[in-house]
Every structure is written in C-alpha cells, then in structure tokens.
Amino acid sequence: MISYLKGTVADIAKGSNRVILTLEVNQIGYEIQILPRVTGQLPASGEVAQIFTHQQVKEDQIVLYGFGSAAERDLFRQLTSVSGVGAQLAIALLDTLGLQDLVQAIVGGNTRILAKTPGVGTKTAERLALELKSKLSEWRQQAGLTTSVAAGVPPAIQEEVEMILLAMGYTAAEVLQALQTLSQDSTLSAKGNADDWIREAIAYLSR
Image (cartoon, rainbow, N blue to C red; front, side, top):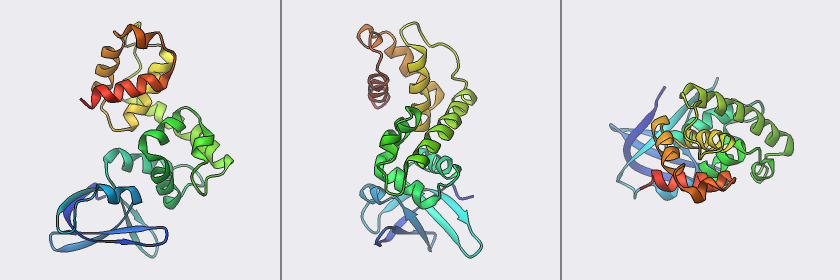
C-alpha cells in the first residue's frame, strides 16, 4: 500500500468529472485521481507536492486516488466501506462538502446535508449516517477518549466533538487538550450547541 507520494507536479488534466494529477517521483510519472478541490492546494507545475494516496486494485487496472491530507484519505476509506458507496461517490462527497462539514453531517445524522451531493439519495444518506457514525464511535473508543474531561463539557457534546476532531486528523492528546482548555470557558459551557464547541476547538488547535 502506498501511503503518500512526494514529487514534482508534471501535469493536471481536468475531464468532465475527474481530475488526474501526474506526479513525477524518482523519474516515474504516477497518474493520480484527485479531488477537484485539491487542485487549488497544489503548487505550480514543476514544484514539489505531497499527496496522500489510496490504491485500488481492480481486475483490469490499478487506480491511485489522491488527497490533500491523511484525514481525507482515511475518511475516503471509511466511506467506501459503506454498502453502495463506490470510489467516485466517496470523492463526490468529500469534494462537495469538504472534510469538516461531511464529518459533522455524519456524526449529527444530517441526511439533508449529505443528500446535497449528486448521486446521494435519501436511503444512501441514511446508510452513511448510521454506519459511519458507528465506525467513528468505535474509532473514538480505540483512541481512549471515553473518560470525562471536565464538568464544563456536556457528555453528548464531548462525544460529538471528539469524533469529529479525530476524523479531521487531530490526535487524541490534542482533542483532550482542547476540551480541557475550553471547559474553563463559562460562556461556552453554558451553551448546548456542539457547533460552537467544534468551532472553538478547531480555532484553539489551529493557533
């Protein structure tokens, strides 16, 4: 399995519904299908870029999918594990909603937001929310984030914030540090809105 490739941007070809990046690594050109939104993050042709990859082996071909972060790549893998969700639909979900909004929609069971992606109907949205929230909950338990942080963090909000931040690529230690710090904010503690906690946690971790 190729975790990531770091090399020179040789070409970006934009088709009707796919974007193919050719990345030259050690004089070998790798064709990688990337999220359309990733093109805005890439340097100019001839400059060095690092792309996180997922390799899919089919009977007649080997396909590399590329992402701007390991968290995007990992969520892509989770998405394609859901029945009825193939690689192209998973890419469409990530590209349409972005990592943060997609994870929040899954954790919050917001099927209306999920269904904004072309090709995602109501039943698929419901399946995504149900199956992936369960997987993210298991991920949270495996990371050891099952104990109370502080009295200022409502348990339901703590669980939601932890699942979302982990899926966005933050470590368990970073998540705990953010929640412990934010729990001392009396104004935030009085709010029962998980979105406020998530926004403040991301702002804290981005400093």
